[in-house]
Amino acid sequence: MNVKKQIFKGTLYAVVAGCMWGISGIFGQLFFRDYHGSPLWITSTRLTIAGIILLAMSFSRDHKRFFDVWKSKKNMPTLFLYVFGGVFSVQYFYYVAIQLSNSATATILQYTAPVFIMLYLLIFQRQVPKPKSVLFVILAMIGVFFVDYGRKYQTFINQSPSPCNRTSRWCSCCYLLNHPSAIIR
Image 1 (cartoon, helix red, strand yellow):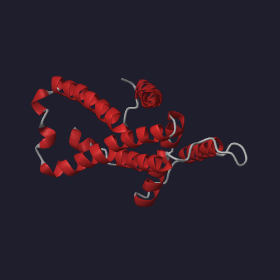
Image 2: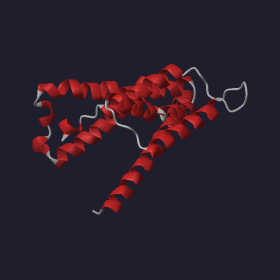
Image 3: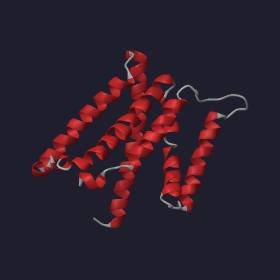
């Protein structure tokens, strides 16, 4: 597959994933409003179903290497940090924020996580971001500011989910920066 096709395919997957994340937030909000469900239930159910599907796909693809990830005990802390500090926590606190406010607020604030990732990479990895990335972060922050404080003395975003959104953003950083790709391969 040539590079342009790979870039197009990756971009398409990223756009679809972002849309699906937003749609799942809307369905989560409806679930909380109409059925009085809990963030723990929706998160654990989603991850259990997704996990079963992914495990079945992985097993059918290469059943001989299926359990290799558990052969080395040194992999376990990284995997548990990734699963509970990242994957589970991001979704759980995202749904708590939705339950406390609405899906639009939670999604807008969730998508500011790349700011923290960029800062982490700059401070601890000494990776200077590209000017285009800095521009996008600045534009995102301006957008969040105007959504939050669009009219003088009036806020559009419900502030009650702020601690949950902050926790979710930090978990996103944990999720993205501690991805155990070397272990999984």
